[in-house]
Length: 214
Image (cartoon, rainbow, N blue to C red; front, side):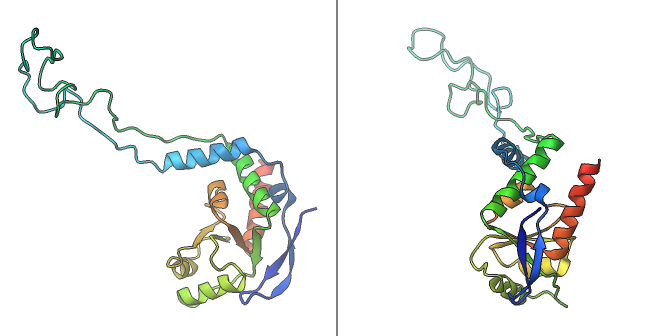
């Protein structure tokens, strides 16, 4: 049996309770899986475009800098040498891709571990589904405040993309909105509180059942 969590209305009143799926919110926590998920996500955000010129790319003369012996200086073959100021860089960074993948089973383990940790710390909340006729930052902030989450980093999860809610929350720096299709372990870990809509929680449980059936 999963843990029961109160369902809040958009004004902060309890409207019942819902059971969190035990296979997602009460699983074994793997610190290694969480570590791999975080490192992989951050690596995949890197552009990898750092670049310097080697001695073959520097636009300088190839004339020998000074005589070979007798000066007490290093034997610099040309003005392009890394030993000369303005010369090429030895073993410098070149454009590269930092893209990495996490095995599917490890990715799922990290996701379950992240949700389990948040639930263990009482950082999972559920709110009734709501929407606005037009984008309203003030109205969205009032919902967050009514749920007792003012000043906390909130990850608001919807069942699918909700353009009006996205526009309503994008000017609130402490709120990040996502939907079940893009929810990741990194998003869960980075937030102080995970706020699911009721339909989003149902969709999450349905998605997990489909994954286990594969």
